[in-house]
Length: 248
Ligand code: NI
Image 1: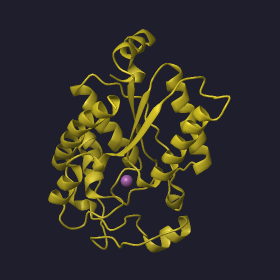
Image 2 (image 1 turned 90 degrees about the vertical axis):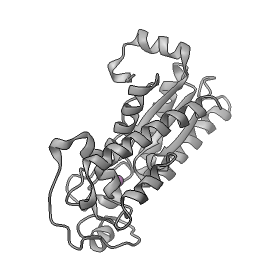
Image 3 (image 1 turned 60 degrees about the vertical axis):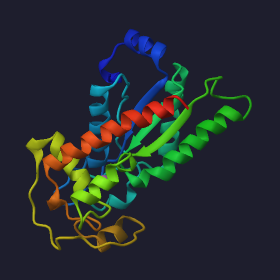
């Protein structure tokens, strides 16, 4: 079930049987010469929607611009400042809590969001704890899960890509998007085949160290078939993980 395709009476009825919702969360940022700019938002969305086909769970709108300042030297990348993202996430979470959602599960597609999402959870809990309690008595429990950390998913990534998985514009994330959008598969030369690894600070530093945008990866290995396997593995694990969280 998708929030955007539901009516308010349907959501009211859902709340009678569940207090949990999944919010895909990601980023709008370059993913090398062959990966979609939407990769980090699309992956958790694709996986969450696949899970919603198999189980009675609600998927909310995708939070699709995250913390990506380090990608701003590449055309098309967008970012929120951490402070903006924290404030926005608080409003998203408190809106849902207002209706009686008690379990908000963020399925994340961008590692660079993690610390900011955790800070937003801390802000929501502080609002709940500090008198006079601006959460208006609606207590909410939030969870962050990176999709590649769902049970069995990283093991499958390692099995599929023994070399050249890397950490940005990875063949696994690119494969998930190619599986869902086969009409948009890209071809471009990748030189070197496996991108360099390393640390970075701001956008200029990133572009200098990783000139085509990839980190440690060879996304030429990505196939839609692999993507299908990853979506199946991740969506099955997501159903289980979300159910466990709902019952905590
Ligand atoms: Ni990514």
